[in-house]
Image 1 (tube, helix red, strand yellow):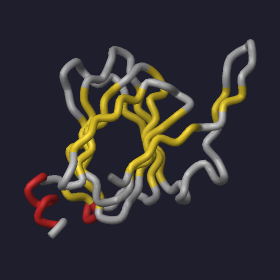
Image 2: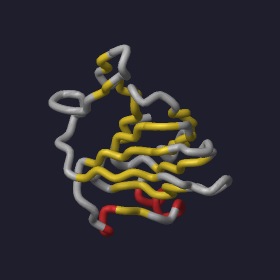
Image 3: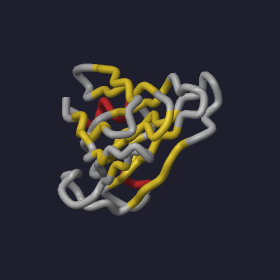
Length: 130
């Protein structure tokens, strides 16, 4: 499956740690950054795939599960560390579930929002793989 955990450089300091996403941390140029927060208990986010766009997800606070599906295999990745994130290639279905109270999900994307890049129906996603 085309996804991987990437460590974000961490500068440790007794006054508080600092992590930076710049230069060669990601294999793409950042074109969009957004974040999810105040997700109600039991709510789910995601539920789509991208035709071209890649994304990098980081749990800035709290935790959540990312369910990934490439049409052949499904796996769950739990994000709960602000110094590592999940790189998701295009062509991977993703769902975000089990948000802890106070969880914040940062998303760094390889492109600006373009509705035509989304596949929002799982059956259509599976047909696109053939």
